Every structure is written in C-alpha cells, then in structure tokens.
Amino acid sequence: MSVDGILAAGAVGVVGAGYVGLATATGFCHLGHRVVAVDRDTTRIDRLRSGHSDLTEPGLDSVLQSGLDSGRLTLSTDFAELSRCEAVFICVPTPVDGAGHSDLSAVFDVIGKLIRIGGDICIVVIKSTVPVGTASRAERLLRPSAMAVVSNPEFLRESHIVTDFLDPDRIVIGDSDRVAGDRIAALYRGIEAPLERVSLESAELAKHASNAFLATKLSFVNELAALCERTGADIREVTAAMAHDHRIGEAFLSPGPGWGGSCLPKDARALLHSGREAGIELGVLDAAVAANTGATGRVIDTVRRGVTGSAQGNLHGRRIALLGLAFKAGTGDLRFSPALDICRSLIDEGATVAAYDPAIPQPVAGLPDEMELVDDPLLAAKDAAAVIVATEWPEFTELDWAAIADVADDPVVIDTRTFLDPGQLSRCGIRLYSNGIAPTGVLHPTSSW
Ligand code: UGA
Image (spheres, rainbow, N blue to C red):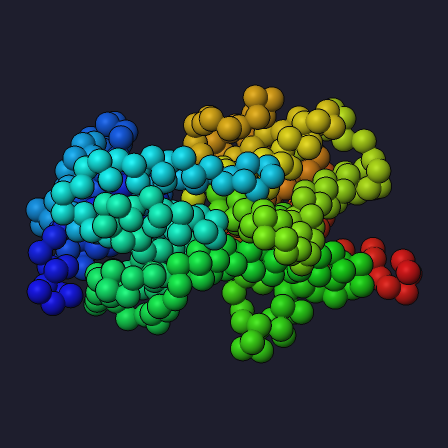
C-alpha cells in the first residue's frame, strides 16, 4: 500500500477538544479526512455535537458544522473509538509551573491509553507543546507496541486558530521514522506552506523557541518604548522605521502592558527550564522574562504620575477605570493577562477598580473579587481619576471620549497599547499618556537628563 493509500484507509484521531484539538480536528476534516475527536468532558462534546464550540474563534463554528454535516467528523467521549484511527494527535494541556517545569501527565496518560487500545493506531503525534526530549521519551514507551512517534507542533494564535491551521506560515514535522513522518506530512496535502522535516528534538525546540523569540522581541519593544518616552522619540515612528528592514519585519513591534496569554509566558519559562536542565544559560530570554515582570510596574508608575503628579504618589481611595481585561483583543481569555496584574496592583495600593471588556459581559472565574465589572465603558469611567486602556479592542478607538471626559474626574487616559488617536483625545480635553510617546513638553532629554 502506498503512503497515500495507508492514509486514505484510516481516520485521523484527535485527543483533546480545546483550542488546539478543535482546530486540528475540524482542519483535517476540512481537508477531506475522516476524523475522530475525543475529549473526556461530556458537556463539551455534547455542545460540539450541536455545532457550537463556545470559543471566540472566527470561522470555527462554520468548519465544525460542515465537518458534522459531511459525516466525516465524529465527536466522542469514548477513547476506544480511536482504535480505528491510524494516526492519533495528542492535543492536551501541558501546564508549566513557576519554575518552568512542564506537567506532562496528561500527555503520558493519553499515551498509556493508546497503548492499551491498540487497534489500527500506528502513529502517535504530539501536537501539545512539550519540552525537548518528550517525544523520545514517548518513543521508548511506545516501542513495544510498534507505534511510531511524530512531533508536529502547533503555531495557532488564539482568535486565529482556523486560519492559522489552514493557512499556516509553516508546517513542522519531527520524526525519527521517516515513513511515519511522510504519512503525517501527507495529511496536510492541500495546504500551501513551507514544510520543515526535522528531528523530534528540533521540532520540539522550534515551537518553544518561536514563542520565546516573540516574547523577547516584545520585551525589547516595551523597553524601547520606555526609552522613547524619556528621550522624546515616538515608538510608532521608531518601529515603523525598523519594520522596513525585512530582517526585522513589521509584526510584533507594538508596545503593550507586557506580553501575556496562555502560551508566551508558559513557553518562555519552559524553555528556560530546558536550558537549565541541559546546563545552558539562556540569558537573553531570562532578561526578556524579567523585563516583562517589570512592565506592569511601569504602567502603575504612569498612573501615579498622571493622577498625583509623581511616580511615588498615592493612589489610595482613587477610582480607576480599566478598559480591557483580556490578554489581547479578539478573545475573552484572561489567562496571564497583564490587565489583571495591573488591576491587582491597583487594588493592593488601595485604589478602586471598575473594569469593562467587550468579551467579558459577566463575571467569570479569575477576576479579582474586589474589582467591579461593568457592561459599559462610561460606567467604568464614571468619577475615575484615570482610565487605563489595557487591551487593544478596536471599539476603544470609536468610544465617545468626550462623554468619558464628562463623566470622569478630570481623567488622565493611559493608552498602554499606543493605538488611540492623541489628537482626538486632546480635543476632548483629555490628558493622554501613550506608551512610548513622551507627553508633550513633559520629558525631554535636555531637561530631564
Ligand atoms: C502565541 C503565538 O503567537 C502562536 O504562534 C502560538 O502558536 C501560540 O502562542 C501557542 O503557543 O499556542 P497567542 O497566545 O494567541 O499565540 O498570543 P499572541 O498573539 O502571540 O500574543 C501574545 C501576547 O503578546 C499578548 O499579550 C499580546 O497582546 C502581546 N503582543 C503581541 C504585543 O504586546 N504586541 C504585539 O505587537 C503583539
């Protein structure tokens, strides 16, 4: 049987129906494969069977529904259904603790189950993000069952998972068994993207290194923003000039309140841990992580300066509005959101925080108890001494800033994302601090240095 013949014969299995698993299952189904997606969460599987993912992911419900309509997508809580699959993709969480140690119990639990199920399974594909060396460990466990291991890391941005699966920048396939790698590569037929065929170790490291590199780029930009403020430069002008250099590129050059989310912080810590385990110091990444920890402090200093006139001023008893809670626009995800760090710091200082986020209309787990969640930016801004814009939701550029100036208490607006129009806010009589832009006439090298 040819490689294509083998693939055509069996279904693709996917374990885990979260962001990664769903993108993988619906994506392969869209490419014409039969897919069996398994998750132990009965409520989630029932909901998915009705065509709803509950994730804020453009296009996901549509590919899910067409998968179900085509009859090629099976959703189940029964692991045994995977026995008719020839390749099974593991897409389960791999949380990382504060020291960077990855909890791989979910991955190895699945591998144990796949060994017991057996059946048609001949390739186990690790798509979950794992530290280097994990696939080799899996290979040793799977050897007696004659199942091969392939590493096929995901590069799916939250709020873009469907397009990132079907139109990726690259597909990375790591293997030590060329035929197994060929079979997995063939599953992606129909997608136009560079294909990197590498070793298991390289594939694992490529994933961690990509996220860690992006994190490092952002820490650099955020520090540069601080320097711009101090020297009278404008971060938007500096990065625009840098971006023309194709070696630098234009992506990931926007300053922010620090990088967050469920991936960059976790993967940066995990890579540092891999470095320590291997006796290699990753000093640049270490510094990038440390710089990110300081990013919240810089926002709070700016709030203090704006409200009290001094970076050492007291915010006790002041009311602060927080616009945006999610770690980035386009998602309601609060995991490792810098906005929450800002919120907790303000509360620790005795300030009152009222927050609004278009994707979080109701209280959800993870929000600080002391924080007031409101469903209208004007309510958040009422009597506020400062309005912090922490997430770059496009709708914040369309806000009625004149109305905000009216209801707030001579507010200062802190634009941590540098995306609001300074002219518009100034016409409303608002004092604006934009991340990486020196407040006019306030800071200049000749006067402050
Ligand atoms: C990240 C990677 O971008 C994906 O390629 C990867 O597959 C994914 O993690 C993963 O490992 O699963 P994601 O967590 O969705 O995706 O978040 P990003 O879009 O990368 O944003 C990360 C953080 O950087 C956010 O806090 C965002 O606001 C911040 N950011 C991003 C900036 O502050 N400035 C920018 O210019 C870009």
